[in-house]
Image (cartoon, rainbow, N blue to C red; front, side, top):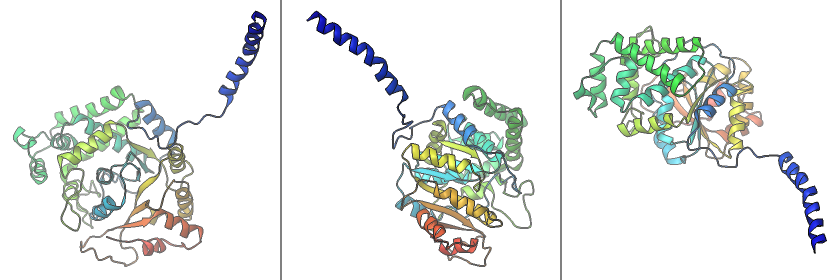
Length: 380
């Protein structure tokens, strides 16, 4: 009996290292399907921003705010057809916040060719986290302290009216931007370069200078074509007169504030036609068993069709996990004389296109021009 036990022990001693080696050397799955986190750590957030990003590129405008006044018109339909908990992709500034509060994705990636846009979103992130309500947020964003009685107002129009009649407070603005940088560097430990900090200061001071009347054309507030102001965009509605903006209610603001605090809006520097940013996002989503719900492209495709870059972009879209409900949301600026009957009298239209239908058409060689994209898109 003792000899038998001894032999077993010897065999186990020999096998144990082999088993452990096999376990160690076996391929490991980084994440299980359907495992997008409820919140993202600061370290993981910054690693994604850093590792998914490409070199910054050029765009002709600072694009501090949107110039699309009809972007809410598609929201009711999207809320009806798209399930919450998916993945939102977007581009540009804060119109993305309105889509996020409407669709309730698990995570959002904002990809823009300008590094400045990534830093704009980091500024917004800090301001959301530093503000207990939307009145305080707007006060900090525009560097204008508000009287206590106005701070308690539930009327957005009254808030903008009060802000527009207040002059910027230089001391308050300096304190606020210092707080933004402290929130990002000291509290989140994001490794911002000195040039990044200077850019955030530049962005913030544009909002202080422009106030609620800041426009896409800033610093020229009234260019040859009049663009909507920040306040006007926040007060916009859908075709039924209902406002869905992230500032429309305290509930919407708090939804976006929580989303930002949980590091679930991730801004990435990337060209839609590049070989890294969108493909990195696609790979990440596949690792997590997740699907793109909506991809807001604004009118970026118009610029991509000025060269062969549109093919590279659609190749990138092919790498994104999508299902039959996934859609692209695009802005159309009437470049081909087509008007959609939305009754808004706006320069732009907001259109929707199913992603799988789009990529199938691309693979079938049915897309040759920007006009082809517009013809296949639908308006509300």
